[in-house]
Length: 269
Image (cartoon, rainbow, N blue to C red):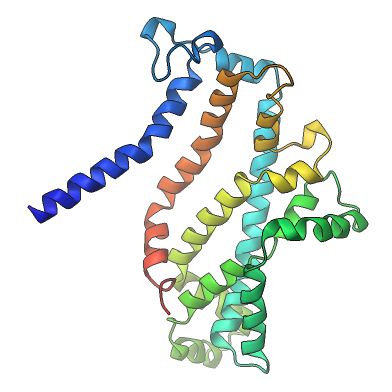
C-alpha cells in the first residue's frame, strides 16, 4: 500500500509537470482569435498550422535556430574541454595554493550573474566582440561549476591507473584524454546536457551583446514577435515548441549518461 501511494503521488506530480507542455502544444495549433476563447484545447476543426507558416514566412526562424546551434555547440565543446581539464588538475594534482584556488572558485559561484554584466560588457567592448557570436562564446568558455563536477567524478579514478599509464610512456595530456576521460563518460553526458540547456536558453546576455538581426539567437528572435500594440502569441508558441524539441531530443539521447553522471561521482562529498 505504501508503494502504491508513492507511485500515485509520483504520477500526479508528473502530470502536473506535463500540464505546461500540453498547454504549449495545444497553443501552437491555435489561431490567434481562439487563443483566449479556448483556454486549453480548441475543437479539432479549429486547429491550424498557420502559426508555423507564419513563423517561417514573417521572420528568419531557421537563421535564428542555426545561430543558436552554433553558439550552443561551440560553447559546450569549449566548456567541456576546459572544465574537464580543470577538474582533472584539481582532482589529481597537488600544488601550492590549491585550497585557496578552490576557495576563490567557489566564491565566484556565489556572485549573482547580473552583477557581472557591466564589467563583462566593457571587457567584450574593448576586445571588439560586440555584435558577434564570439562575444557570446568567449565569456562562457570556462565553467566553474563544470570544473567541480568533473573534479568530483575524477576523484574516483584510481591513481594506480595514472601511474600505469606514465610507466607505459603516456604524457599528462594523453593520460587525461585516453585514461581519465573514457572513465568519466557519464559525467561528460550530464555536463553536456546541462551546458547545452543553459546556453540554448540564454536570453539576457545575447540581448545585450547582439545588435544585428541576422546574428540573433532563438530566444532573442522569438522575443522580437512581441510588438508595441500586439503580439503574435500563436507563432510565439509554435516557435517555443520548436525551440524545446532539440533539448528534449538531446535529453533522451543522453538520459542514461545524465542519470549515471549525477548519481556517481557528482554526489560525493
